[in-house]
Length: 195
View 1 (cartoon, rainbow, N blue to C red):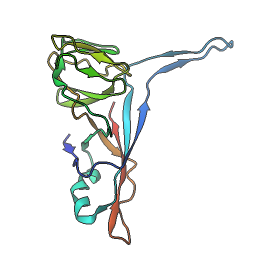
View 2: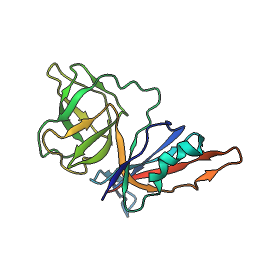
View 3: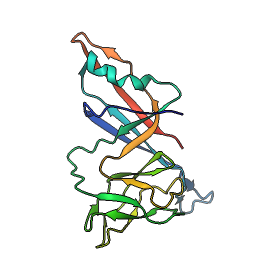
């Protein structure tokens, strides 16, 4: 299945963040406490609203109409300075759960709570979000707590993208490709990670 990279220009005017949860909610039939169990499989869907653009500029976005392909789109984090994270990689194979151990970070680099990141395993971008601040030690290692469980066990030295995280998935809820009377094109679409 081909993976098509969407343009980075223009930047989105807005982005909606949706967590597609796979949690299990247990409700007692006798009126007891509710419980939630985290399970593998929770993922993200991001809705992008693009600024009005000329028809010629919009032509570069035609991959939104591709059938049977997934797309890669940069996650919009306006006003957030990622800084210099270094070249982070997964530190150790077979990791699971909500913690990801990485190395190759710039010593002292802080992965911020709410910051998006990718783990690229077997060429596929898995999108995660940090659940708490994590600071790299003097060796460039850190343990990042994730908002959702790892969906696929990463391999040792898999790339961890902090500088420009991407969402990889299918285009859903594509609004009509409308050319207005002002000759500008308005585009809104959702990229939903595959499970």
